Amino acid sequence: MAISPKLLNEGERVVLSTRTHPKALLLPLLALVVCLGVAVFVQVALDVRILTIAVWALAGIGILWWTVWPTLEWLTGTYAFTNRRLITRTGVLTRRGHDIPLARISDVAIELHLIDRILGCGTLVISDASTHGQVELPDIPRVEEAQRRLNDLLHAIDGPLTRDEGA
Picture 1 (cartoon, rainbow, N blue to C red):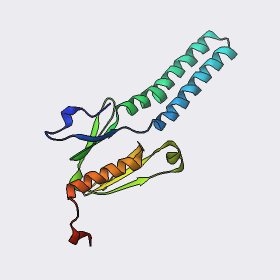
Picture 2: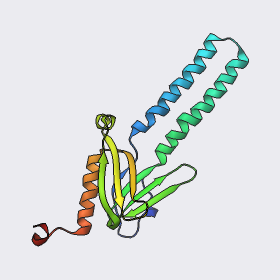
Picture 3: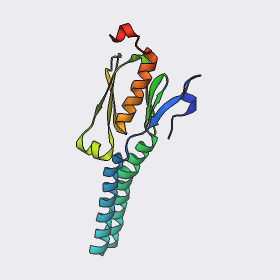
């Protein structure tokens, strides 16, 4: 789900739009396999109709709770960098958003754990001048590229250094 054009001001354009890495779906996938495995095992091993129905009902609830809901949250969560601000939107029923003007961003850092490096993602940590201090965007695909692009945006806002400033 991309950022809605309704969220953009006149002259604002999206530079980078992403969501969390699909690795966020690994646990929901595992939950799906376990729920189905338990339900099939009970159905095959025990030939009690009422117990089988109850187990399949519980498996269905478990699949909705541990697989479908996290997948919907993953699908609806987006992060976008425009030429003016960072826009985050998350949530299925209750949408939550956070906008940070690029001019208030003071630092951009990344965290790459071993699994993150293997899967090509990482956490983008953005420090700003607000009372919140930091915003962590977990599991951003190609996080180093996102950091470079954000730094380019910040550099464009500050303007290039003159010879006297860089010396």
